[in-house]
Structures are given as C-alpha cells and as structure tokens.
Length: 65
Image (tube, rainbow, N blue to C red; front, side, top):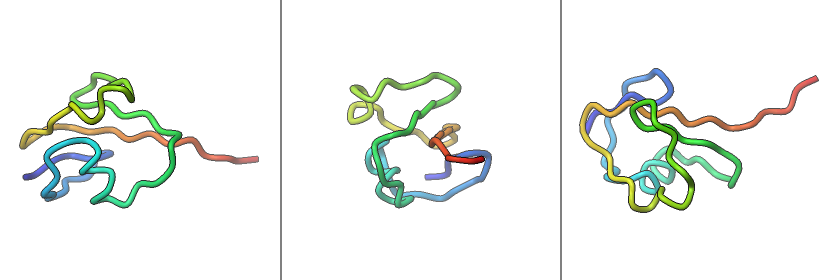
C-alpha cells in the first residue's frame, strides 16, 4: 500500500496505525498522529485502519535550545 507519511511517499505493508509505527520503527509514547488531516486520539490508534493513498502526519516532540 502506498501512503504519504510526513510528506514522503512510502510503500508499506501495515494496515493500521500500530503496524505503521512498528514498520517505520517509531518508538516512545510522546507523539501525535493525524490521518487525512484528522487527529486520531491515542485511544483509537489500534482501531484506525489505513487505506491506499492516506496522508499520515506523525509529530514527535524535540528538544532544542
């Protein structure tokens, strides 16, 4: 399946958000995810399926100074 993740086209086998996070090796608990411009609450990640052509934004905090 082809998705756009953070502005980059990716071919993935994941069919849901947890699968995508694992496939892309995202770790940690502090992140926000939007699917097709709609923020998905963490409690609904496991139930959120993905479809070919979806646009995913994964936002993680960064420290800076």
